[in-house]
Length: 254
Image (cartoon, rainbow, N blue to C red; front, side):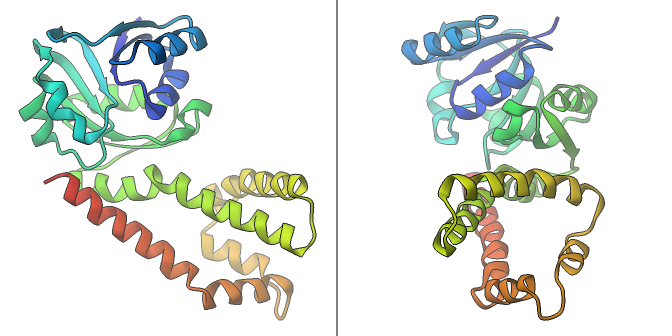
């Protein structure tokens, strides 16, 4: 069984480990002994270790899950040349990775937190020699999309990577609206959860515009609510969210 070495054990790393632990041997390297022990207790099959000042990554398959601004400090503690480096760092280019962490082959990838439920939408790009293996790894945690440039990956990151936060706002707002109208909060949350679960299946086979048209009757309740969303600029807000996130990703990459 192939060993994947995670450097970092934050929320994204934990989600990925949950999704990959049954298909790969997992090693986790981190700085905080307490959080590593907690992760080991949660997932006993993994191995953990504290990052040393001369951490040897020779021949390892690394999944890099640290904050982008931590890469300079991290690179000073690593020795050797990794076989493969898979990075989930938003905005951090392959050129920067090559400059900081020696490896034979590089992949940039952006999963999302749904990885822990094997439902991540993961975008991938990098060295074509690793395409098949990268898709195989990340298909274990959901769906994958290979793109041919880092620019496309940065844009995709702003949709699938950041998207759970945007959809969380929509979900919370729908629940708040139901409560304001008189529904119990617990019932409102159950309705929103069921809505999102069913909508994902609809979206797999139906264009969003068709879903909208099939739901909206002339002069009906959906039309009234939809008009309010347009008046409030929901569509424009979502478009700007992706654009602003992309601009931020470009800044991080410089």
